Image (cartoon, rainbow, N blue to C red; front, side, top):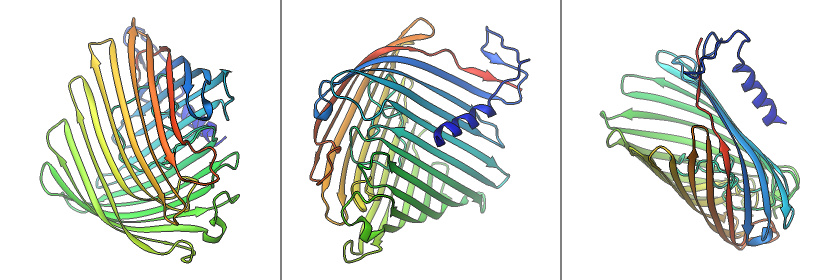
Amino acid sequence: MAILLLAASAASRAQVVPAAIVPASTGEWSGLPVSGALHYDVRYSQTAQFGGSQDGQQMSYISGDASYANTGKRLPFSMQYGAGYGLVWAGPPSAGNVFQHLTLSQGIVGRTWNLSVNDDASYSFQTPTTGFSGVPGIGEPIGGPVTPTLPDQTILTVNTRSIDNFTTLGFGHKLDSATTLNLSGASGQMLYLDNDGQNMDTYMASAGVTRRLNARNSFSSQYSFSRFNYVGSVQVANAAQIGYSQANTVQFSLSRQWNPHLATSASAGPQWISSSNSAILPSSTGISANASASETFRYGTASLMYSHGTTGGSGYMLGAESDIAMAGFTRSFGKNLNVGVTGSYMRTAGLENSGATSGEYGGAQVTRMLGRYFNVFASYTAADQSSSLLNAPNVLNGLWQTIGFGIGYSPREIRLKK
């Protein structure tokens, strides 16, 4: 419901007036109360899955995406929404047929300061993997830049309906021409609709300073606090006794822009971990580290990301230490053929020695344009995970593969002008 309300709110901001002029030759709508770029696409796909509890399942999907961006200097705004419906016509039933993902971002830019509000909400019936929605085989573009952030769900699951929402408020202020103060706060909720995972609330706050050393290098230091509350029905052993786990982290980072196409960043620092019940989850000290690199080529993009640190436990642990490595690559061959590849490795170990999971997933997709607006695609996705968790039947334990193919309609971007 929250996702639908947010989508309706975003759509109302981009409504056009009846008197709008639409020159077909340029793709521009003029005489509007807003300006920016609007794009949408729709797809039909067929998928077949092999391995795990969904072995032999075959599905048909209707899905689509819509995005809007206003890159104004004072009030930049962007929205992306993806959704779909899947129909099982052979093999085991699915826990859900509908999936949705919505991101909203609103900025306010002053002369020496900026304020941003971001919200990311999703509903899915499995752990997200490739593409914006995270559902493999439906024809979304895969590969390309990887956002260097920790995902909430670092444990691969199937047939598990969940709602995930994360809201962030950020503030930046230039102290001088080379120094910026950064403050942020965030809250998130993860809900398992069928009580097959532990519901969790997340609260975060951070403060830091970034110093530009020269035209290519910048250095920053940051303190952050994270707290994970385990709420609702108790699905994980000792959740009622612990209540929450938390981490205090100090990080120092260095970023470098090697050239207009290649950028790298690396950060590390100590992390102090504690909980509301030290008899079950004792206090400890660890290391938090992040690294990323991205490069834009003439005909494609590539990216790498690695992260190590404490997470909330993804609904199956009361706090966890996670290692995540992600990579993506896209390549265009002429104007009509595009290839995307993505991959990830995730290891999640419970802080209270409840078990561990070690998983990998990867995907590849080939998209071929048919004329100006239509395309056909074929994709392959594989996920493999080993788990020592007890009483977690929906956690993937083994190899799971998905083959998909279909057709899409993607018209040219519409430019809105006042």
